[in-house]
Image (cartoon, rainbow, N blue to C red; front, side, top):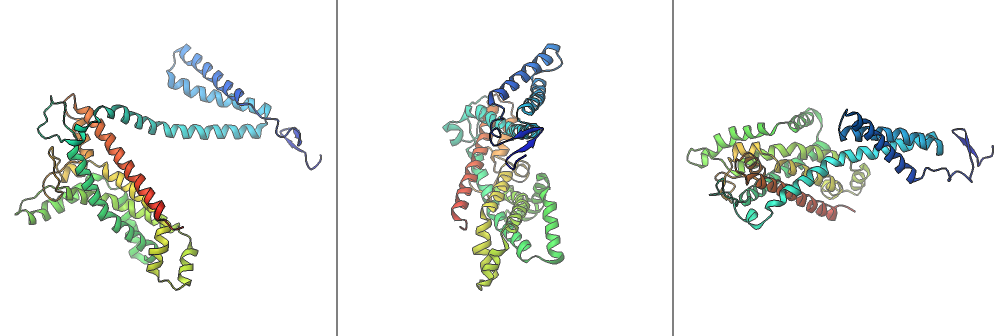
Length: 360
């Protein structure tokens, strides 16, 4: 056998036929159609299941038929490659289907109340038989609460991650990392109870003549507790991915460590840090229990996050979903769509800003 010839699955491959043995796309589609027909006839004909079982058996029959057909035409090695590639594509499709279903459900059901009244009015003086009413007060509450929480959590989280990566050594750093890991899984209701016991019942009476008071700022503190571990862990991982030669090159030029971190390390890791921050923001925007516990919720518009009850979009969805009014479900779906769109807009804006300012 010459150097230009090789044997694959008992077939001698030469430069003349190495590219001719390929299963056509039409044949693969035919195998898929036959597999679905056989699965439908087997399942629906015997009455042992529904269309879900038909799809499952159809995929199984398709993989078997594809392996047999590809083995005869291309060889067993290429057939195995096709099978695994098909399984990978199927797994990707199964992962995308729930996300696509959620988006379609939100858009189809949330479009009913996408009007000016929904975004320009509150639920104040809206009864069960009133078709109007909107989420303006909840949108304001979400923006203020999440905005304040972000201003508090991002500097603390990023500085904490910088300490753990660049300076942290010994038992204290291990202790900090351990508590960050523990806080990552803390339930949101626990954060709300902590702020309720500390801020609402102990601290807020100092500023209100001895009377505890709910506020949007208290909700921001609870959301800060939930955001901190996510920001610290994601930022820590991004800082560890920064190549060591970048730091060493800056040190070799006489740049101090703090300036190296500020001018080299952080710009390099900025896209990943922004991703972690937006994950934390998305979680904070969707929390309901802390807002219910320490902000109380309100039907009227409250622009002051430091005084009085305040609502949020997630709390508004929770309240409208449980309301007995026949108009409430439409408000709940539209508020959920608004919340998702708001987080999406903030994520895209943050990504564009990070891409523009990252180190070349």
